Image 1: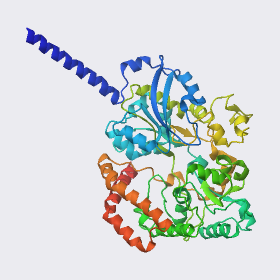
Image 2: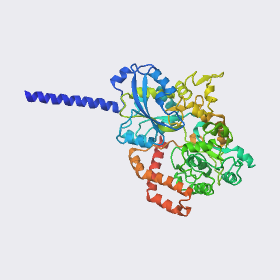
Image 3: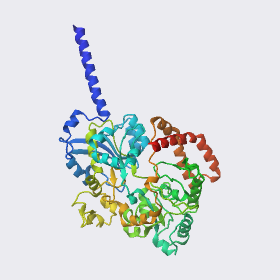
Image 4: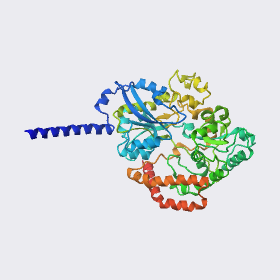
Length: 541
């Protein structure tokens, strides 16, 4: 009898354990528990009857609000939803390290917010069960986002992993919202251009001549130490401007180093092309002659903004200087047209509708997946986009005579002489990007839609790539990713390292063939085959 009681006890314990595990697995797979569903309201707000709290991991940038636990937009949204967010704020300098620590076995948050996960990241951690699939949750609890996917099939294609799952809410660019799609844009110091009695550069050669004149003739008349071209990194000059002048990235910027070979029509890894080499030789020439800021590979972001605000740069590829740096000297900058390269190329490459695939992911630690999806879905609605980008009526914006929301005077005309971005960041969390929302012309009032930014777009407009001519991000199977995260990552890292070395003169172009052979030895043929297979699947869908 005693043994039967012990056996019965063991069976009961086993059943309880199985039940507990089943319940845990249910949550980990993103299926709402009965407790969550009972607390969830059918109507929009509040989202839940009894208040809940969620832990969010978020990145903040120097120019943004530093503590989202007390910022107008989320304070108001908490009152509206009955959902409290405990924000763990991580600086942009350390977020990758801290994010990887959490993913590598540390304490996972309920949500990673604006953490810029790539599609390979999403596929990797989604297949491991760290990130939950959102397909059914979107179907049942995200009517606004679901509608966007139905209206824009290219978005769904871009954010769906090869296993058929969606693992994140993205940052979206509204269709036709050109000024936002292109991001950073080229500006030139018009005051110096006039002082040098030069015409606006139209070609890469004319741009070189202008930069050279800035260095040699000192158009500021000793007021500042002139830097012909300045930037926060070399990336903006190349990716946001010069690639298209040399016929590169002709299928957009969504896929690193991949485009279509104009001669054969095949997929091309363009860092091995002659056009790419010529582009690097051109940028090296600028750098070698002191026409590019010498510490551009390591410059502190705040130092870059200070230099720009002081009017030290002859040109930049960035956001409107008048808004992000200083009104005093920023007004001297005007937009530049797309530069025609040595072979007549001048198409500005763009990213497309998906700005960031991994803006918000829900981890397997989250006990309230349906609530979280409802929380995020609001920001893809008309009302939610207005709230996110404009704030609160009467506090940050008011409605003008045409019925459009406009920032209030204390934001557009800062009493502290702050830029628009700095004033907006007191109330909103737009700075830095990467958020789960869609930027549209109706509500997005960031620096990209200010007069200086729109003027710059107008100069570029005739040569901006059309969205239908771009390739969506290539989505790989787990097997492909296992390979790409190994030798594929090494190839991409090597290309970037060598790019900088060629530009800085640390590697001679006499060693170009050695560079090509090294890529071959690293498995470039296999890399291209994997990319081609992914492209074939995408084009066949």
